[in-house]
Amino acid sequence: MQLPSIVALAFVAFASFTQVLGAHEIRFRNNCATRRFTPRWKAGSGATSSGPVLYPQTTWSTSVPEKWVAGRAWGSDASCNNADGAGCTLFECTFSNVGYNQCNISRVSGFNVGMSFSWINPGAGCQGGKRCSTATCPNTGAWLPPDSCNGCLSQCNTGGVGMLVTFCP
Image 1 (spheres, one colour):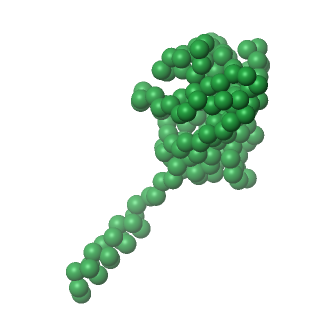
Image 2 (tube, helix red, strand yellow):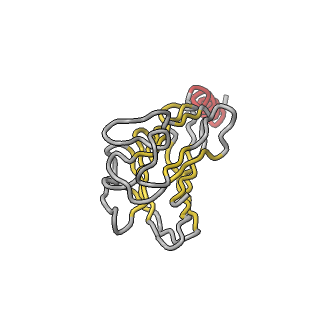
Image 3 (tube, rainbow, N blue to C red):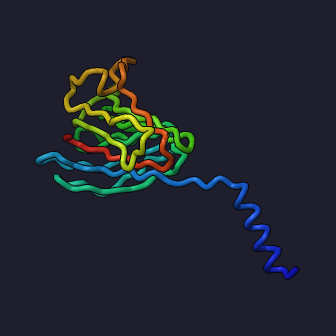
């Protein structure tokens, strides 16, 4: 057997035992009439990432890894510009296992803009998204302070599913 054939065979054997993980698209949409936001996101205690300024009626996408644990995203503006999203309406999501994803909107640390989310290419194993348009939305639409959720979580069992996060839904 020639050396290139041995290397190719070893690669195929290794690949067959390795789980290939995809990524999740997170698409940010600014439906506000006049306000603009900078989308920001982070996972757990990791570093905060930022996208471009989203002017009214614009959309921008990024991706996060398949295993994105304790992720959060928010629209940063003059009233909400902390590196961890404190004081902001938060989109919280965990993509912790291939095909098991759980997300919610949170008002626990504050509210700066109405927000909704929905799954992109959800498949049959996904629940509907959630919406919290005002600072008084109920605990069916968002996680409320101090710790109140009554069906505010949305789950999806489709691996690699994407997410649309909308400001001013």
